[in-house]
Amino acid sequence: MTDVQRVGVIGCGLMGAGIAEVCARSGLDVVVREIDDAALAAGRARIEASAGRALASGKITQEQHDAALGRLTYTTELTDLADRDLVVEAATENPDLKIALFAELDKVVERRDAILASNTSSIPIARLAQATGRPGQVVGLHFFNPAPVQKLVEVVESILTDPRTTARARAFADERLGKTTIVAPDRSGFVVNALLVPYLLSAVRMVEAGHATAEDVDTGMTLGCAHPMGPLRLCDLIGLDTLLAIAESLHQEFREPQYAPPPLLRRMTEAGFLGRKSGRGFYAYQ
Ligand code: CAA
Image (cartoon, rainbow, N blue to C red; front, side):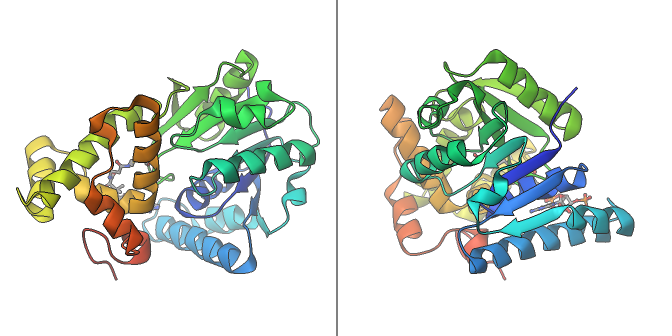
């Protein structure tokens, strides 16, 4: 059984908001921390929109909806995470930022056996663990987008992770959140992104080279292979900046051309075409 009741989520972007919502809907007390009031308000709006959607589709009742939102507290202070049993860091995919956050978290979180988790897609967990004085308590908890919908969580065990932490993290995600976990190696991309990202980058290269339109690539993969969405739409869902960061990390780790970010992905990111969250990526969104 899981001993986790009080959860902290750092970052309330696409992934942080989804993770916070999943935790609150599972009956946990959740403190969400963002960097400033504007980011916090945007994150809160994201969570409320998503919970509203679950209510509208009949997935949850009005009571469950209200109770879930009532379990969420929003803050800009990291010190408000002091009494947490588990913290999931879901900040921007930037190694220096995450390392600094783990060093701070180590000072702030009082329970010495609290689990310090990262939702990173590609940064080695061992590097984050070394920023703390309790590397055995640090583990990867990698959710998939949209977190309220996707059933998988990769639990990433570093060479420094205490196996008991891995077991507790799995029990938390499996039993408490109702997800299914797999244990993934502490290598860039873990299991899923190591397979998914070369596929997405190939689709971007195909469009970049003019072999096919984004629409035709996506229709090909949805109707030809029964994928729920085509690769370019999926790039837009993940966020092109996030995908670029993951590809760079994979390329740095393995030096294989399949992971090299295509120039088009860089140009689009530099131009602010980040996908759904910015209103424009390979497709336009309202
Ligand atoms: N937040 C919450 N719920 C959402 C949602 C969101 N952002 N998007 C969709 N949903 C819910 C809807 O409410 C709906 O629920 P109900 O069935 O209860 O009504 C359900 O999901 C289906 O949604 P839609 O009918 O609107 O659309 P759809 O059937 O086309 O499904 C999708 C949308 C769930 C995104 C589906 O297309 C899908 O699973 N796509 C693949 C997503 C994927 O591969 N994710 C992994 C990305 S990789 C990653 O995340 C790892 C990384 O590190 C980059």
